[in-house]
Length: 242
Image (cartoon, rainbow, N blue to C red; front, side):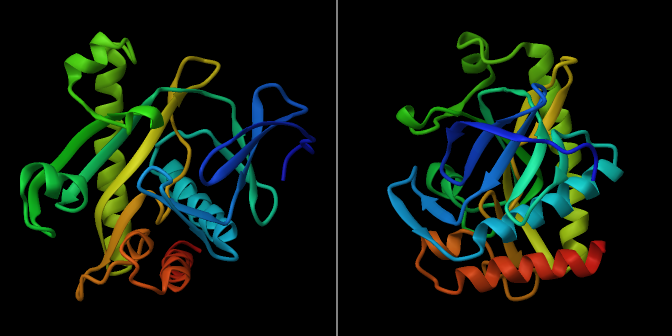
C-alpha cells in the first residue's frame, strides 16, 4: 500500500461501477458493483459478491499484463470492492478482439457459434449507449474524430498484444478466450493505457474441453450458475498467478 488516498465526491455511476474523486487530482477510486446488465441494460440482475469477484479478477489480470509490459490505469486494490486508478481521458471506443465466433458477429456475418478464426479479429464500437454502441469502420472513426489515425494503430497493436497474453494465460487454466472487450484512455503524459476492467462481464470464456460458457452469457441466456462461473474463473486465475 502506498500513501493513503482519501475518497472524495462521487463522479459517475455506470452499469457495473461507480467513480469517485480522491485527494489526488490524478487518481480516482473505482467501486465495483454487484449489478449485472445485458442488452444495453434492458436486462438487469445482480448477485451478492459480484463486485468483489470482478475487482479481484481485474486486479489479477492487470497485474499479469503489467509484468508483460502492458501499461494500464490500474494502481492498487484498496478494499474488497474498490481500487485506485490513474485518471485518464477515455477514448470513446470499445475495442473487441474475437478468437472464435460468438455474439454479434454470428448474427452479422452468419458464422456458426464457436467457429475458430484463422487470426484474431479486431473490431471497434462507438461508446454511445443512445446509439446502441454501433460497429464502426476506420473511416467512421476518422469522420467522428474519435481518435487520430496514429492512435487507432496504437489501439489495434495493443489490443492484439493483450489478446496474445490473455489467450496464453487462459489456456494455462483450461479456458478458451473466445472474445473480449477492452477500453483505453490517455493519461496525463498523453500515453495510451489499458483502462476500465477485464472480467467475465467483458470476456467470453469457455471451458476448453466442454465449451461450457463461464461468463456473462450465462446471465444473458438464462443458463443459471452465474455466480459459480465467475467464482470459478477467479479461483483458476488465483491458482495460476499467485
